[in-house]
Length: 77
Image (cartoon, rainbow, N blue to C red; front, top):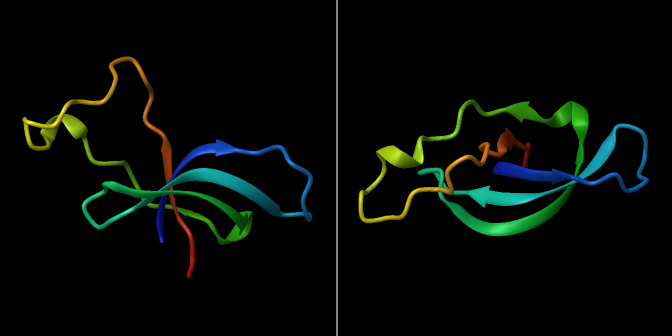
């Protein structure tokens, strides 16, 4: 699953596990569903840089200026 992280919770969990809030992404990098997932940190891997929203269809509004992009990670299925 491709997942864009927007928050890492500081909730108490098992050693090496965390709760993440973010968006599941489709193959085009579009957010399709907001999710909270419980993952093992060692199982995460970076997916690379998110697509530049300015290079998309010009009819879609651009992201808010001055807001840093969220981190994107791949979670194993």
